[in-house]
View 1 (tube, rainbow, N blue to C red):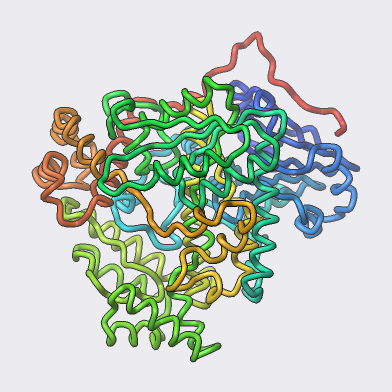
View 2 (view 1 turned 135 degrees about the vertical axis):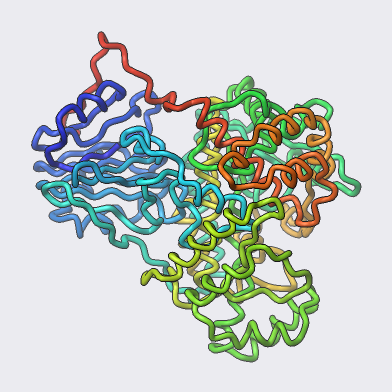
Length: 615
Protein backbone atom coordinates (compact mmCIF):
# COMPACT_ATOMS: atom_id res chain seq x y z
CA UNK A 1 0.00 0.00 0.00
CA UNK A 2 1.03 3.59 -0.63
CA UNK A 3 -0.18 6.29 1.77
CA UNK A 4 -0.08 10.03 1.13
CA UNK A 5 1.86 12.33 3.45
CA UNK A 6 -1.25 13.21 5.46
CA UNK A 7 -3.05 12.61 8.74
CA UNK A 8 -5.29 9.55 8.88
CA UNK A 9 -8.26 8.59 11.05
CA UNK A 10 -7.15 7.28 14.46
CA UNK A 11 -6.23 3.60 14.46
CA UNK A 12 -5.89 3.20 10.70
CA UNK A 13 -2.10 3.18 10.59
CA UNK A 14 -1.88 0.84 13.56
CA UNK A 15 -4.30 -1.53 11.83
CA UNK A 16 -2.14 -1.57 8.72
CA UNK A 17 1.09 -2.01 10.64
CA UNK A 18 -0.39 -5.06 12.33
CA UNK A 19 -0.49 -6.71 8.89
CA UNK A 20 2.69 -5.34 7.28
CA UNK A 21 6.12 -6.95 7.34
CA UNK A 22 7.89 -3.93 5.84
CA UNK A 23 7.50 -0.16 6.03
CA UNK A 24 9.14 2.93 4.55
CA UNK A 25 8.20 6.39 5.93
CA UNK A 26 7.88 9.71 4.17
CA UNK A 27 10.60 12.27 4.89
CA UNK A 28 8.12 13.72 7.40
CA UNK A 29 8.14 10.45 9.34
CA UNK A 30 4.56 9.52 8.43
CA UNK A 31 4.09 6.05 6.92
CA UNK A 32 4.46 5.92 3.13
CA UNK A 33 4.91 2.31 1.96
CA UNK A 34 3.46 -0.65 3.82
CA UNK A 35 3.51 -4.28 2.72
CA UNK A 36 5.77 -7.27 2.30
CA UNK A 37 8.68 -7.12 -0.13
CA UNK A 38 11.94 -7.80 1.74
CA UNK A 39 11.56 -11.56 1.36
CA UNK A 40 11.24 -11.29 -2.43
CA UNK A 41 14.03 -8.77 -2.99
CA UNK A 42 11.89 -7.10 -5.65
CA UNK A 43 12.08 -3.49 -4.44
CA UNK A 44 14.64 -0.78 -5.22
CA UNK A 45 14.58 2.29 -2.98
CA UNK A 46 16.43 5.60 -3.22
CA UNK A 47 16.54 8.83 -1.18
CA UNK A 48 18.06 12.16 -2.10
CA UNK A 49 17.49 15.45 -0.29
CA UNK A 50 14.20 14.41 1.28
CA UNK A 51 12.92 12.95 -2.02
CA UNK A 52 12.04 9.25 -2.12
CA UNK A 53 11.63 6.91 -5.07
CA UNK A 54 10.80 3.20 -5.08
CA UNK A 55 10.38 0.61 -7.83
CA UNK A 56 8.53 -2.65 -7.11
CA UNK A 57 8.83 -5.64 -9.45
CA UNK A 58 11.32 -6.58 -12.12
CA UNK A 59 13.35 -3.45 -12.91
CA UNK A 60 16.73 -3.10 -14.57
CA UNK A 61 18.02 -0.50 -12.09
CA UNK A 62 19.27 -1.32 -8.56
CA UNK A 63 18.93 1.05 -5.61
CA UNK A 64 22.36 2.68 -6.06
CA UNK A 65 21.72 3.50 -9.72
CA UNK A 66 18.19 4.62 -8.87
CA UNK A 67 19.60 7.21 -6.44
CA UNK A 68 21.74 8.67 -9.23
CA UNK A 69 18.59 9.11 -11.31
CA UNK A 70 16.68 10.57 -8.38
CA UNK A 71 19.28 13.31 -7.90
CA UNK A 72 18.20 14.72 -11.28
CA UNK A 73 14.59 15.01 -10.15
CA UNK A 74 13.49 18.37 -8.77
CA UNK A 75 9.73 17.88 -9.13
CA UNK A 76 7.33 15.05 -9.91
CA UNK A 77 7.15 16.28 -13.50
CA UNK A 78 10.81 15.25 -13.91
CA UNK A 79 10.21 11.71 -12.71
CA UNK A 80 9.38 9.82 -15.90
CA UNK A 81 12.25 11.46 -17.76
CA UNK A 82 14.60 10.28 -15.00
CA UNK A 83 13.28 6.72 -15.42
CA UNK A 84 13.78 6.68 -19.21
CA UNK A 85 15.61 3.53 -20.30
CA UNK A 86 14.61 1.45 -17.26
CA UNK A 87 13.08 -1.76 -18.57
CA UNK A 88 11.10 -4.52 -16.90
CA UNK A 89 7.67 -4.70 -15.30
CA UNK A 90 7.24 -2.66 -12.14
CA UNK A 91 5.32 -0.15 -10.04
CA UNK A 92 6.72 3.32 -9.35
CA UNK A 93 6.13 5.28 -6.14
CA UNK A 94 7.61 8.68 -5.24
CA UNK A 95 7.28 11.13 -2.33
CA UNK A 96 8.48 14.73 -2.60
CA UNK A 97 7.70 17.59 -0.21
CA UNK A 98 4.27 16.27 0.70
CA UNK A 99 3.35 15.33 -2.87
CA UNK A 100 2.94 11.70 -3.89
CA UNK A 101 3.13 9.82 -7.21
CA UNK A 102 2.22 6.18 -7.88
CA UNK A 103 1.71 4.26 -11.10
CA UNK A 104 1.71 0.75 -12.49
CA UNK A 105 2.71 -0.33 -15.99
CA UNK A 106 1.25 0.91 -19.27
CA UNK A 107 0.48 -2.70 -20.22
CA UNK A 108 -1.69 -3.26 -17.16
CA UNK A 109 0.47 -6.17 -15.97
CA UNK A 110 1.20 -4.09 -12.85
CA UNK A 111 -2.16 -2.75 -11.71
CA UNK A 112 -3.04 0.00 -9.26
CA UNK A 113 -6.25 0.56 -7.27
CA UNK A 114 -7.48 3.46 -5.15
CA UNK A 115 -10.10 4.30 -2.54
CA UNK A 116 -10.97 7.19 -0.23
CA UNK A 117 -10.77 7.07 3.57
CA UNK A 118 -11.96 10.19 5.36
CA UNK A 119 -11.26 12.30 2.28
CA UNK A 120 -7.74 10.90 1.93
CA UNK A 121 -6.72 8.82 -1.11
CA UNK A 122 -4.87 5.56 -0.54
CA UNK A 123 -3.80 3.03 -3.16
CA UNK A 124 -2.52 -0.53 -3.41
CA UNK A 125 -1.41 -3.06 -5.98
CA UNK A 126 -4.36 -5.30 -5.06
CA UNK A 127 -7.97 -4.20 -5.00
CA UNK A 128 -8.68 -6.79 -2.35
CA UNK A 129 -6.34 -5.06 0.10
CA UNK A 130 -8.40 -1.89 -0.14
CA UNK A 131 -11.66 -3.86 -0.02
CA UNK A 132 -10.52 -5.37 3.28
CA UNK A 133 -9.54 -1.95 4.57
CA UNK A 134 -12.90 -0.28 3.84
CA UNK A 135 -15.04 -3.43 4.29
CA UNK A 136 -16.19 -3.36 0.66
CA UNK A 137 -18.32 -6.02 -1.00
CA UNK A 138 -18.12 -7.47 -4.52
CA UNK A 139 -19.94 -5.33 -7.08
CA UNK A 140 -22.68 -7.44 -8.69
CA UNK A 141 -22.67 -5.57 -12.00
CA UNK A 142 -18.93 -6.08 -12.40
CA UNK A 143 -19.36 -9.80 -11.74
CA UNK A 144 -22.00 -9.87 -14.48
CA UNK A 145 -19.55 -8.22 -16.86
CA UNK A 146 -17.12 -11.09 -16.37
CA UNK A 147 -19.62 -13.51 -17.90
CA UNK A 148 -19.45 -11.65 -21.23
CA UNK A 149 -17.50 -12.95 -24.23
CA UNK A 150 -15.29 -12.65 -26.15
CA UNK A 151 -13.85 -9.80 -24.06
CA UNK A 152 -14.82 -6.68 -22.19
CA UNK A 153 -14.37 -3.33 -23.90
CA UNK A 154 -12.49 -0.35 -22.53
CA UNK A 155 -13.05 1.03 -19.88
CA UNK A 156 -14.87 -1.96 -18.31
CA UNK A 157 -11.97 -4.37 -18.73
CA UNK A 158 -9.71 -4.46 -15.67
CA UNK A 159 -12.18 -2.71 -13.38
CA UNK A 160 -12.04 -3.46 -9.67
CA UNK A 161 -14.44 -6.17 -8.52
CA UNK A 162 -15.27 -4.27 -5.32
CA UNK A 163 -17.73 -1.46 -4.62
CA UNK A 164 -15.92 1.69 -3.54
CA UNK A 165 -12.56 0.54 -4.93
CA UNK A 166 -11.56 1.88 -8.33
CA UNK A 167 -8.84 0.83 -10.77
CA UNK A 168 -6.35 3.41 -11.99
CA UNK A 169 -6.25 3.07 -15.77
CA UNK A 170 -3.02 1.66 -17.23
CA UNK A 171 -0.99 4.59 -18.50
CA UNK A 172 -2.32 6.88 -15.74
CA UNK A 173 -0.56 7.83 -12.52
CA UNK A 174 -2.18 8.68 -9.19
CA UNK A 175 -0.95 11.98 -7.73
CA UNK A 176 -1.66 13.04 -4.15
CA UNK A 177 -1.44 16.57 -2.81
CA UNK A 178 -0.48 17.70 0.71
CA UNK A 179 -3.49 16.79 2.81
CA UNK A 180 -4.08 13.53 0.92
CA UNK A 181 -6.42 14.42 -1.97
CA UNK A 182 -5.67 12.35 -5.06
CA UNK A 183 -6.25 12.70 -8.80
CA UNK A 184 -5.05 10.80 -11.87
CA UNK A 185 -3.11 12.07 -14.87
CA UNK A 186 -1.52 10.31 -17.88
CA UNK A 187 2.15 9.40 -17.61
CA UNK A 188 2.44 7.25 -20.77
CA UNK A 189 1.85 8.06 -24.41
CA UNK A 190 2.03 5.55 -27.24
CA UNK A 191 4.91 6.20 -29.65
CA UNK A 192 4.01 7.19 -33.22
CA UNK A 193 3.61 4.20 -35.54
CA UNK A 194 6.20 5.24 -38.12
CA UNK A 195 8.94 2.58 -38.28
CA UNK A 196 9.20 0.18 -41.24
CA UNK A 197 9.39 -3.54 -40.54
CA UNK A 198 13.19 -3.96 -40.56
CA UNK A 199 13.87 -1.04 -38.25
CA UNK A 200 10.98 -1.95 -35.94
CA UNK A 201 12.06 -5.59 -35.79
CA UNK A 202 15.53 -4.58 -34.63
CA UNK A 203 14.03 -2.49 -31.81
CA UNK A 204 11.69 -5.32 -30.81
CA UNK A 205 14.58 -7.79 -30.68
CA UNK A 206 16.52 -5.45 -28.38
CA UNK A 207 13.49 -4.98 -26.11
CA UNK A 208 12.80 -8.71 -25.86
CA UNK A 209 16.49 -9.45 -25.22
CA UNK A 210 16.49 -6.99 -22.32
CA UNK A 211 13.17 -8.28 -20.96
CA UNK A 212 14.34 -11.91 -20.93
CA UNK A 213 17.91 -11.20 -19.74
CA UNK A 214 16.50 -9.28 -16.77
CA UNK A 215 14.86 -12.50 -15.59
CA UNK A 216 16.99 -15.30 -17.05
CA UNK A 217 20.38 -14.71 -15.49
CA UNK A 218 23.47 -16.89 -15.98
CA UNK A 219 23.51 -17.99 -12.34
CA UNK A 220 19.88 -19.16 -12.32
CA UNK A 221 17.79 -22.14 -13.36
CA UNK A 222 14.81 -20.84 -15.30
CA UNK A 223 11.69 -22.74 -16.27
CA UNK A 224 9.96 -21.95 -19.55
CA UNK A 225 6.89 -23.05 -21.45
CA UNK A 226 7.77 -24.48 -24.87
CA UNK A 227 4.83 -25.22 -27.13
CA UNK A 228 6.87 -25.05 -30.31
CA UNK A 229 5.00 -21.90 -31.30
CA UNK A 230 6.76 -18.70 -32.25
CA UNK A 231 6.16 -16.85 -28.96
CA UNK A 232 7.39 -19.45 -26.46
CA UNK A 233 10.21 -20.58 -28.75
CA UNK A 234 11.49 -17.00 -29.05
CA UNK A 235 11.67 -16.61 -25.27
CA UNK A 236 13.43 -19.95 -24.84
CA UNK A 237 16.12 -19.11 -27.37
CA UNK A 238 16.58 -15.68 -25.80
CA UNK A 239 16.89 -17.29 -22.35
CA UNK A 240 19.48 -19.72 -23.65
CA UNK A 241 21.34 -16.78 -25.23
CA UNK A 242 21.44 -15.05 -21.82
CA UNK A 243 23.26 -18.02 -20.29
CA UNK A 244 20.56 -19.25 -17.94
CA UNK A 245 20.12 -22.97 -17.26
CA UNK A 246 16.84 -23.73 -19.00
CA UNK A 247 14.19 -26.32 -18.12
CA UNK A 248 11.33 -26.42 -20.63
CA UNK A 249 7.80 -27.79 -20.26
CA UNK A 250 5.78 -29.04 -23.24
CA UNK A 251 2.18 -30.29 -23.12
CA UNK A 252 1.13 -32.84 -25.72
CA UNK A 253 -2.59 -32.36 -26.26
CA UNK A 254 -4.37 -35.27 -27.91
CA UNK A 255 -6.27 -33.45 -30.69
CA UNK A 256 -5.86 -35.04 -34.11
CA UNK A 257 -3.15 -33.33 -36.10
CA UNK A 258 -1.49 -31.80 -33.03
CA UNK A 259 1.92 -30.49 -34.05
CA UNK A 260 3.21 -29.02 -30.78
CA UNK A 261 5.20 -32.14 -29.90
CA UNK A 262 7.12 -32.16 -33.17
CA UNK A 263 7.92 -28.45 -33.17
CA UNK A 264 8.77 -28.38 -29.45
CA UNK A 265 11.19 -31.29 -29.81
CA UNK A 266 12.78 -29.63 -32.81
CA UNK A 267 13.28 -26.47 -30.73
CA UNK A 268 14.56 -28.31 -27.65
CA UNK A 269 17.20 -30.15 -29.68
CA UNK A 270 18.60 -26.77 -30.71
CA UNK A 271 18.55 -25.14 -27.29
CA UNK A 272 22.05 -25.58 -25.83
CA UNK A 273 22.02 -27.24 -22.39
CA UNK A 274 18.23 -27.17 -22.01
CA UNK A 275 16.47 -29.93 -20.08
CA UNK A 276 13.18 -30.64 -21.90
CA UNK A 277 10.19 -32.02 -19.98
CA UNK A 278 7.25 -33.49 -21.89
CA UNK A 279 3.81 -34.23 -20.46
CA UNK A 280 0.89 -36.14 -21.93
CA UNK A 281 -2.68 -35.68 -20.62
CA UNK A 282 -2.67 -39.06 -18.87
CA UNK A 283 0.15 -37.87 -16.61
CA UNK A 284 -1.63 -34.68 -15.56
CA UNK A 285 -4.78 -33.72 -13.65
CA UNK A 286 -7.85 -33.34 -15.84
CA UNK A 287 -9.02 -29.88 -16.85
CA UNK A 288 -11.11 -28.29 -14.09
CA UNK A 289 -9.55 -30.52 -11.43
CA UNK A 290 -9.65 -29.11 -7.91
CA UNK A 291 -13.01 -27.34 -8.20
CA UNK A 292 -13.87 -28.52 -4.68
CA UNK A 293 -10.64 -27.06 -3.25
CA UNK A 294 -11.23 -23.30 -2.96
CA UNK A 295 -7.98 -21.39 -3.07
CA UNK A 296 -7.44 -17.73 -2.24
CA UNK A 297 -9.10 -15.68 -5.00
CA UNK A 298 -7.16 -13.82 -7.64
CA UNK A 299 -7.86 -10.14 -8.30
CA UNK A 300 -10.75 -11.02 -10.58
CA UNK A 301 -12.51 -14.05 -12.11
CA UNK A 302 -10.61 -15.67 -14.95
CA UNK A 303 -10.50 -18.68 -17.24
CA UNK A 304 -7.28 -19.78 -15.50
CA UNK A 305 -9.58 -22.08 -13.52
CA UNK A 306 -9.56 -24.48 -16.47
CA UNK A 307 -5.98 -25.69 -16.08
CA UNK A 308 -5.16 -24.45 -12.58
CA UNK A 309 -4.32 -27.93 -11.30
CA UNK A 310 -2.31 -28.71 -14.43
CA UNK A 311 -0.24 -25.55 -14.08
CA UNK A 312 0.43 -26.23 -10.41
CA UNK A 313 1.73 -29.66 -11.36
CA UNK A 314 3.99 -28.22 -14.05
CA UNK A 315 5.23 -25.56 -11.63
CA UNK A 316 6.10 -28.29 -9.15
CA UNK A 317 8.06 -30.22 -11.79
CA UNK A 318 9.98 -27.12 -12.84
CA UNK A 319 10.62 -26.07 -9.26
CA UNK A 320 11.83 -29.59 -8.45
CA UNK A 321 14.56 -29.13 -11.02
CA UNK A 322 15.72 -25.89 -9.43
CA UNK A 323 13.75 -23.30 -11.42
CA UNK A 324 13.28 -20.00 -9.57
CA UNK A 325 10.80 -18.54 -12.07
CA UNK A 326 8.88 -19.46 -15.19
CA UNK A 327 8.81 -17.72 -18.55
CA UNK A 328 5.55 -17.68 -20.50
CA UNK A 329 4.96 -16.69 -24.10
CA UNK A 330 1.61 -15.21 -23.10
CA UNK A 331 0.98 -11.89 -24.78
CA UNK A 332 2.85 -12.59 -27.99
CA UNK A 333 -0.35 -12.98 -30.03
CA UNK A 334 -1.76 -9.73 -28.59
CA UNK A 335 1.37 -7.59 -28.78
CA UNK A 336 3.08 -8.30 -32.11
CA UNK A 337 0.01 -8.53 -34.36
CA UNK A 338 -2.37 -5.53 -34.63
CA UNK A 339 -6.15 -6.08 -34.93
CA UNK A 340 -7.36 -5.78 -38.52
CA UNK A 341 -9.22 -2.56 -37.67
CA UNK A 342 -5.96 -0.78 -38.58
CA UNK A 343 -7.25 -1.05 -42.16
CA UNK A 344 -9.77 1.71 -41.37
CA UNK A 345 -7.04 4.27 -40.68
CA UNK A 346 -4.75 2.91 -43.40
CA UNK A 347 -7.43 3.62 -46.01
CA UNK A 348 -7.16 7.31 -45.20
CA UNK A 349 -3.34 7.35 -45.26
CA UNK A 350 -2.65 4.96 -48.11
CA UNK A 351 -5.77 3.81 -49.98
CA UNK A 352 -3.97 1.48 -52.37
CA UNK A 353 -2.18 -0.40 -49.56
CA UNK A 354 -5.39 -0.58 -47.53
CA UNK A 355 -7.46 -2.02 -50.37
CA UNK A 356 -4.78 -4.57 -51.21
CA UNK A 357 -4.49 -5.79 -47.62
CA UNK A 358 -8.27 -5.73 -47.17
CA UNK A 359 -8.64 -8.01 -50.19
CA UNK A 360 -6.26 -10.47 -48.55
CA UNK A 361 -8.04 -10.45 -45.19
CA UNK A 362 -11.42 -10.66 -46.91
CA UNK A 363 -10.36 -13.73 -48.86
CA UNK A 364 -8.92 -15.38 -45.77
CA UNK A 365 -11.91 -14.58 -43.52
CA UNK A 366 -14.62 -14.78 -46.20
CA UNK A 367 -15.93 -11.35 -45.28
CA UNK A 368 -19.05 -10.27 -47.19
CA UNK A 369 -18.38 -7.35 -49.52
CA UNK A 370 -21.05 -5.07 -48.00
CA UNK A 371 -19.85 -5.69 -44.43
CA UNK A 372 -16.26 -5.05 -45.49
CA UNK A 373 -17.23 -1.74 -47.05
CA UNK A 374 -19.13 -0.72 -43.90
CA UNK A 375 -16.05 -1.42 -41.81
CA UNK A 376 -13.73 0.62 -44.01
CA UNK A 377 -16.12 3.57 -44.33
CA UNK A 378 -17.49 3.62 -40.78
CA UNK A 379 -17.67 7.02 -39.08
CA UNK A 380 -19.22 5.80 -35.84
CA UNK A 381 -17.67 7.07 -32.60
CA UNK A 382 -16.53 4.79 -29.80
CA UNK A 383 -19.21 6.18 -27.48
CA UNK A 384 -21.86 5.34 -30.09
CA UNK A 385 -20.42 1.83 -30.39
CA UNK A 386 -20.62 1.31 -26.61
CA UNK A 387 -24.21 2.56 -26.65
CA UNK A 388 -25.09 0.16 -29.47
CA UNK A 389 -23.42 -2.74 -27.65
CA UNK A 390 -26.21 -2.65 -25.08
CA UNK A 391 -28.67 -3.86 -27.72
CA UNK A 392 -26.57 -6.89 -28.68
CA UNK A 393 -26.00 -8.48 -25.26
CA UNK A 394 -28.45 -11.34 -25.79
CA UNK A 395 -27.67 -12.03 -29.45
CA UNK A 396 -25.57 -14.89 -30.81
CA UNK A 397 -22.22 -13.83 -32.22
CA UNK A 398 -22.37 -13.46 -36.01
CA UNK A 399 -20.45 -15.87 -38.21
CA UNK A 400 -18.51 -14.74 -41.27
CA UNK A 401 -18.93 -11.01 -40.69
CA UNK A 402 -16.22 -8.43 -41.23
CA UNK A 403 -15.05 -7.06 -37.85
CA UNK A 404 -16.28 -3.74 -36.50
CA UNK A 405 -13.61 -1.05 -36.28
CA UNK A 406 -14.09 -0.80 -32.48
CA UNK A 407 -14.11 -4.55 -31.81
CA UNK A 408 -16.60 -7.35 -31.25
CA UNK A 409 -19.68 -6.61 -29.16
CA UNK A 410 -19.59 -8.32 -25.73
CA UNK A 411 -22.37 -10.88 -25.38
CA UNK A 412 -23.82 -12.58 -22.32
CA UNK A 413 -24.39 -16.34 -22.28
CA UNK A 414 -27.91 -17.72 -22.66
CA UNK A 415 -28.14 -18.57 -18.96
CA UNK A 416 -27.55 -14.98 -17.82
CA UNK A 417 -30.69 -13.48 -16.27
CA UNK A 418 -32.67 -10.49 -17.53
CA UNK A 419 -31.52 -8.67 -14.40
CA UNK A 420 -27.89 -9.37 -15.32
CA UNK A 421 -28.39 -8.03 -18.83
CA UNK A 422 -29.93 -4.86 -17.42
CA UNK A 423 -27.03 -4.36 -15.01
CA UNK A 424 -24.42 -4.92 -17.71
CA UNK A 425 -26.31 -2.61 -20.06
CA UNK A 426 -26.20 0.15 -17.45
CA UNK A 427 -22.44 -0.30 -17.13
CA UNK A 428 -22.07 0.13 -20.89
CA UNK A 429 -24.33 3.19 -20.89
CA UNK A 430 -22.35 4.89 -18.12
CA UNK A 431 -19.10 4.07 -19.89
CA UNK A 432 -20.39 5.66 -23.10
CA UNK A 433 -20.98 8.93 -21.25
CA UNK A 434 -17.36 9.32 -20.18
CA UNK A 435 -15.38 12.12 -21.75
CA UNK A 436 -12.00 10.32 -21.79
CA UNK A 437 -12.85 7.79 -24.52
CA UNK A 438 -11.19 6.12 -26.30
CA UNK A 439 -7.48 5.87 -25.30
CA UNK A 440 -6.58 6.57 -28.95
CA UNK A 441 -8.67 8.56 -31.42
CA UNK A 442 -8.02 6.23 -34.36
CA UNK A 443 -10.01 3.00 -34.12
CA UNK A 444 -7.15 0.71 -35.10
CA UNK A 445 -4.80 2.36 -32.61
CA UNK A 446 -7.41 2.06 -29.85
CA UNK A 447 -8.05 -1.61 -30.64
CA UNK A 448 -4.34 -2.38 -30.58
CA UNK A 449 -3.68 -0.68 -27.25
CA UNK A 450 -6.74 -2.33 -25.71
CA UNK A 451 -5.64 -5.73 -27.02
CA UNK A 452 -2.20 -5.23 -25.48
CA UNK A 453 -3.67 -4.20 -22.13
CA UNK A 454 -5.91 -7.23 -22.10
CA UNK A 455 -2.76 -9.32 -22.45
CA UNK A 456 -1.16 -7.37 -19.62
CA UNK A 457 -4.19 -7.87 -17.38
CA UNK A 458 -3.99 -11.66 -17.83
CA UNK A 459 -0.21 -11.53 -17.35
CA UNK A 460 -0.78 -10.02 -13.91
CA UNK A 461 -3.14 -12.86 -13.02
CA UNK A 462 -0.67 -15.44 -14.34
CA UNK A 463 2.06 -13.96 -12.16
CA UNK A 464 -0.23 -14.00 -9.13
CA UNK A 465 -1.30 -17.60 -9.75
CA UNK A 466 2.30 -18.69 -10.31
CA UNK A 467 3.45 -16.98 -7.12
CA UNK A 468 0.76 -18.92 -5.23
CA UNK A 469 2.37 -22.09 -6.62
CA UNK A 470 5.81 -20.83 -5.48
CA UNK A 471 6.99 -20.29 -9.05
CA UNK A 472 6.17 -16.78 -10.36
CA UNK A 473 5.19 -16.75 -14.03
CA UNK A 474 6.70 -13.90 -16.06
CA UNK A 475 5.35 -12.67 -19.40
CA UNK A 476 8.16 -10.65 -21.06
CA UNK A 477 5.95 -9.81 -24.05
CA UNK A 478 3.93 -7.63 -21.67
CA UNK A 479 6.81 -5.40 -20.57
CA UNK A 480 6.21 -1.74 -21.45
CA UNK A 481 9.38 -1.48 -23.53
CA UNK A 482 8.21 -4.41 -25.67
CA UNK A 483 4.81 -2.78 -26.14
CA UNK A 484 6.42 0.49 -27.15
CA UNK A 485 8.66 -1.29 -29.66
CA UNK A 486 5.62 -2.97 -31.27
CA UNK A 487 3.48 0.17 -31.29
CA UNK A 488 6.25 2.11 -33.05
CA UNK A 489 5.98 -0.14 -36.12
CA UNK A 490 3.59 0.71 -38.95
CA UNK A 491 0.54 -1.55 -38.47
CA UNK A 492 0.43 -2.49 -42.16
CA UNK A 493 3.95 -3.93 -41.70
CA UNK A 494 3.24 -5.69 -38.39
CA UNK A 495 -0.04 -7.14 -39.67
CA UNK A 496 -0.41 -8.98 -42.94
CA UNK A 497 -2.94 -11.40 -44.43
CA UNK A 498 -0.14 -13.27 -46.21
CA UNK A 499 2.28 -14.02 -43.36
CA UNK A 500 2.08 -15.06 -39.71
CA UNK A 501 3.49 -12.59 -37.15
CA UNK A 502 5.86 -10.90 -39.61
CA UNK A 503 7.20 -8.49 -36.98
CA UNK A 504 8.25 -11.22 -34.54
CA UNK A 505 9.60 -13.41 -37.33
CA UNK A 506 11.80 -10.55 -38.53
CA UNK A 507 12.90 -9.73 -34.97
CA UNK A 508 13.96 -13.30 -34.19
CA UNK A 509 15.61 -14.06 -37.53
CA UNK A 510 19.04 -15.66 -37.08
CA UNK A 511 18.33 -16.59 -33.45
CA UNK A 512 15.29 -18.86 -33.71
CA UNK A 513 15.42 -21.56 -36.43
CA UNK A 514 13.53 -20.65 -39.58
CA UNK A 515 11.32 -23.71 -39.34
CA UNK A 516 9.84 -22.39 -36.08
CA UNK A 517 9.46 -18.85 -37.42
CA UNK A 518 7.59 -20.19 -40.44
CA UNK A 519 5.06 -22.19 -38.41
CA UNK A 520 1.47 -21.02 -39.00
CA UNK A 521 -0.52 -23.60 -36.99
CA UNK A 522 -1.72 -23.41 -33.40
CA UNK A 523 -2.82 -26.40 -31.31
CA UNK A 524 -5.59 -26.54 -28.73
CA UNK A 525 -6.81 -28.65 -25.82
CA UNK A 526 -10.46 -29.03 -26.87
CA UNK A 527 -10.50 -32.78 -26.29
CA UNK A 528 -9.11 -32.39 -22.78
CA UNK A 529 -11.53 -29.51 -22.07
CA UNK A 530 -14.59 -31.67 -22.75
CA UNK A 531 -13.04 -34.63 -20.92
CA UNK A 532 -12.50 -32.43 -17.85
CA UNK A 533 -16.13 -31.33 -17.81
CA UNK A 534 -17.28 -34.95 -18.06
CA UNK A 535 -14.87 -36.05 -15.34
CA UNK A 536 -16.10 -33.40 -12.92
CA UNK A 537 -19.79 -33.59 -13.81
CA UNK A 538 -20.77 -34.40 -10.22
CA UNK A 539 -18.96 -31.37 -8.84
CA UNK A 540 -20.44 -29.16 -11.56
CA UNK A 541 -23.93 -30.43 -10.69
CA UNK A 542 -23.34 -29.50 -7.05
CA UNK A 543 -22.17 -26.06 -8.14
CA UNK A 544 -25.26 -25.59 -10.29
CA UNK A 545 -27.55 -26.57 -7.40
CA UNK A 546 -25.83 -24.19 -4.97
CA UNK A 547 -24.72 -21.50 -7.41
CA UNK A 548 -23.78 -18.17 -5.85
CA UNK A 549 -24.32 -16.56 -9.25
CA UNK A 550 -27.91 -17.76 -9.27
CA UNK A 551 -28.38 -16.72 -5.65
CA UNK A 552 -27.30 -13.20 -6.67
CA UNK A 553 -29.81 -13.18 -9.53
CA UNK A 554 -27.07 -13.21 -12.19
CA UNK A 555 -27.90 -16.57 -13.79
CA UNK A 556 -31.04 -18.64 -14.36
CA UNK A 557 -30.65 -21.85 -12.29
CA UNK A 558 -32.14 -24.35 -14.78
CA UNK A 559 -30.31 -22.89 -17.78
CA UNK A 560 -27.05 -22.80 -15.83
CA UNK A 561 -27.38 -26.44 -14.81
CA UNK A 562 -28.01 -27.47 -18.41
CA UNK A 563 -24.94 -25.52 -19.58
CA UNK A 564 -22.68 -27.05 -16.94
CA UNK A 565 -23.82 -30.63 -17.44
CA UNK A 566 -24.34 -30.61 -21.21
CA UNK A 567 -21.63 -28.36 -22.65
CA UNK A 568 -22.04 -30.02 -26.04
CA UNK A 569 -25.44 -28.35 -26.37
CA UNK A 570 -23.95 -24.91 -25.80
CA UNK A 571 -24.10 -23.16 -29.16
CA UNK A 572 -22.43 -20.01 -27.87
CA UNK A 573 -18.94 -21.48 -27.72
CA UNK A 574 -16.73 -22.28 -24.75
CA UNK A 575 -15.85 -18.73 -23.66
CA UNK A 576 -19.21 -17.99 -22.01
CA UNK A 577 -19.12 -21.21 -20.01
CA UNK A 578 -15.49 -20.73 -18.98
CA UNK A 579 -16.22 -17.17 -17.89
CA UNK A 580 -19.22 -18.35 -15.89
CA UNK A 581 -17.23 -21.06 -14.13
CA UNK A 582 -14.51 -18.54 -13.39
CA UNK A 583 -17.01 -16.10 -11.85
CA UNK A 584 -18.68 -18.85 -9.79
CA UNK A 585 -15.31 -20.06 -8.52
CA UNK A 586 -14.23 -16.52 -7.64
CA UNK A 587 -17.37 -15.90 -5.57
CA UNK A 588 -16.87 -19.18 -3.73
CA UNK A 589 -13.22 -18.40 -3.06
CA UNK A 590 -14.06 -14.94 -1.72
CA UNK A 591 -16.67 -16.50 0.57
CA UNK A 592 -14.19 -19.12 1.78
CA UNK A 593 -11.46 -16.52 2.37
CA UNK A 594 -13.21 -13.38 3.68
CA UNK A 595 -9.85 -11.98 4.74
CA UNK A 596 -6.84 -12.14 2.39
CA UNK A 597 -4.27 -14.63 3.61
CA UNK A 598 -1.45 -12.22 2.87
CA UNK A 599 -2.99 -9.84 5.43
CA UNK A 600 -2.67 -12.28 8.31
CA UNK A 601 -1.98 -10.62 11.66
CA UNK A 602 1.72 -10.18 12.30
CA UNK A 603 3.23 -11.73 15.41
CA UNK A 604 3.06 -8.99 18.10
CA UNK A 605 6.64 -9.85 19.10
CA UNK A 606 7.85 -9.18 15.55
CA UNK A 607 8.22 -5.48 14.70
CA UNK A 608 7.81 -4.47 11.07
CA UNK A 609 11.02 -3.80 9.16
CA UNK A 610 11.08 0.01 8.94
CA UNK A 611 13.55 1.19 6.30
CA UNK A 612 14.99 4.57 7.27
CA UNK A 613 18.46 4.15 5.78
CA UNK A 614 19.79 6.28 2.94
CA UNK A 615 20.16 4.32 -0.30
